Length: 147
Image 1 (cartoon, rainbow, N blue to C red):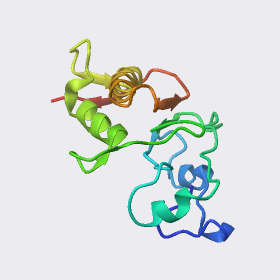
Image 2 (cartoon, helix red, strand yellow):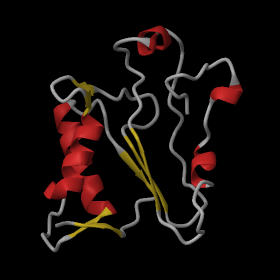
Image 3 (cartoon, rainbow, N blue to C red):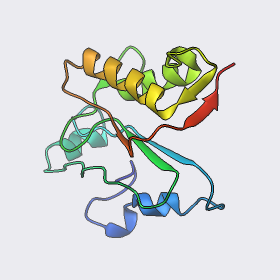
C-alpha cells in the first residue's frame, strides 16, 4: 500500500498487508482490514499520482486465519469519492452498515456477509457498477453486536 506520505519510488515507504496483519498480538484474534484507496484522481497528491501507471493489485487470500480484507475496489477500478459525505462511497456505506443498516435479518448481530452485501450493493449502485467492493475471504462470521 502507498500511504499518503509515501513515495512510490521508495519501497521503504510502502506498507505490505502482511505487515499490518502481524500487528495482531494474539494469533486467535479476528482481524478486519478496511481499504478505501483512490486511484481515480482528485485533489492533492492523488492528482500527481493519477497520471502515473498505478494499479491496485488484486486482493489475494491472506493465509492467516480469521483475517478479512474489505476493499473499496479490486484491480484497476477507481474508488469513487462521495463529495457530499467528504470521503469515499465505500467508507460511507461501510460506516452506515456498521451502525446497523446492514443487519438485514435484524438479529442484532452484523456478519461479514451482511456488511459486504450491503456495502457492495450500495456502492455498485451509486457508481453505476464502476466500483465493486471486495471481501477476502468470502466467509461469514459475526463481527459486531448492534445496539
